[in-house]
Amino acid sequence: MFWHANKMRVVGLDVGYKPAVIAISGSPGFTAQGMETVSRNDYMAALKRIIEECNSSKLF
Image (cartoon, rainbow, N blue to C red; front, side, top):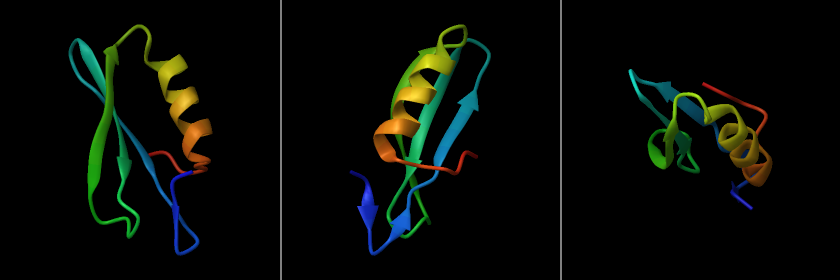
């Protein structure tokens, strides 16, 4: 799980012209790292999977 000191990580979505990038924040919530690059048409399934894996309730 992606838990640290009872802080939940935030999942971010950057939908570009063609690819979409899904990122997750670091444990303090100050920085983010790219998790996956997906096609703009298929990003919802990947986003749902990553949110569930990270047990996140926050999306940016």
